[in-house]
Length: 486
Image (cartoon, rainbow, N blue to C red; front, top):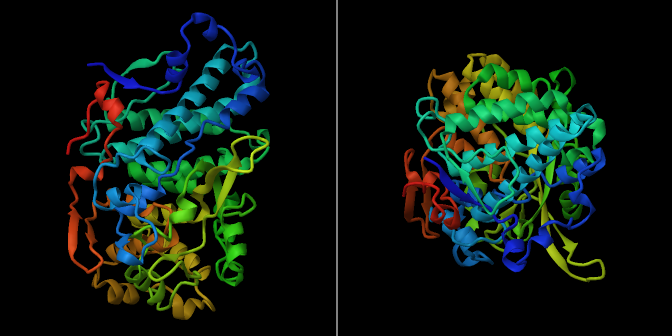
């Protein structure tokens, strides 16, 4: 049965213009997509201009109630912590991410429609590749957040999200959610068709586009979620020449740990940083508030992940900062303003988010090798990672042995389980403040327990709790699209 999905791309135009003449005129020159350059310019908008870290971090076990020590308490931070639907639609909210993602998909679809109708489509090959991969990515993020996480046993019946492949030309379009399995099929189709077409030389600032490296990184994540582990390794090994990831990991010990605070903020999201594979600039208050929010990185979490020895026997070299008692942060994000007008002195706050990094590719490969029984390959990658995060690293004393794993995680002879715990812990520390932990909790159906600032349990999210799936925006469900159960 068909359902209605409401888009807001042109509704405001129709609401305030009562004649067809308006729609017959080009708004500006970019609406005439008659050159490769104009299609490339359009594709700058084919990436979700929104952050998900604010709500996925608060829902995860990387957040605690910091109580009166917190500077800021807002529903965008509070509601996810209590696993409530977020009614706020401002930047950093789930609704904002939903609409931004479908706006990105619409841009990709307009580009693809143009390319399909030009007399010289071969000249647009790189743009077609970028549009297909960008469309796949936006749908992938939507289905990962607003549907149940991929499970091969249930994906064929779990409701997905609308996979949109044609440009929006009406206010109300007819769409179906179909299934998670269907969405994954379409993602894979777009990804595999688009990836070989990408040409890095077509970009002025490559790190803000799907280069071949970023596309392979995306493929390694997609196949990890899909549990197709051989393909994870295949794509991870194509991110960097010769599959050599190590030299591209962030040099926390040799560089980052000696930087001043301002230097640290400047470098983390720079396009010149080898570890950053894909960046996006999005309207967001995350850089301003990620240490100040009441529900976030607390002393208890800092003590476990950053102040106590991990399975290597030592601590990570991440410099820790505070903005008042219990408001901890690792320097990653800085806020900048995009002027509201060329002559204005004020603007809108923006944050740059790394969407794919060399570290994630390494972890994806390590986890895939572990799933395939290649324990030593996993150990090699984890030791490689540790060597860039521990001061005075020594392979003999810091190497991750079976005995260390068994002792640290109490997993006995189950080395593979201990290795998995190691990967998940390493990732939790590496991606703190980036909202990535949430997806691991979903994939492995790990429970999430949240506490008050006095240590009382306020809520626990079990492995099958329906609140693990974000609710669709209210306008969308009112228009007829099936709600997620609660």
